[in-house]
Image (cartoon, rainbow, N blue to C red):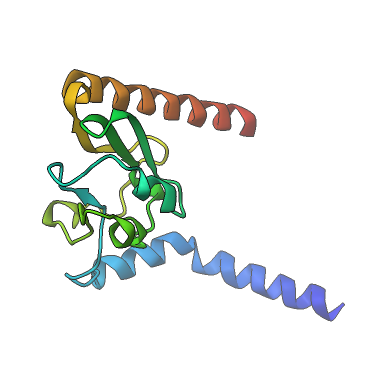
Length: 155
């Protein structure tokens, strides 16, 4: 009986406080992240040899790659899935990846569109331009289909 009363009290307390997310976002707005916090990886195209090490060591599997050879391929990232761990930067054999604070990301750090917010990190050779744009569009459409499936499943 005591457990039921404790659980009921916790439920009422949480109901009165409101959604936790609003409190967290308010705190983030009042106390923005420090300037030296890491953000989304950036690849220096001239140094990248398309070895795939970054894709293989990524613990959150947010990096993807299509390639034919070291001069022809692309690497993209699913931004919301990246946890800024720095493994890709640490293990890159050519020091081609850097995870530094980008001013352009400071306002959009927490505004990701899950399963649809892809960025092209590097595109070389015939994968540049239209091919890279086409691949990103395919990924975004695939993510949109997954979101619709989830919404239909939930009813």
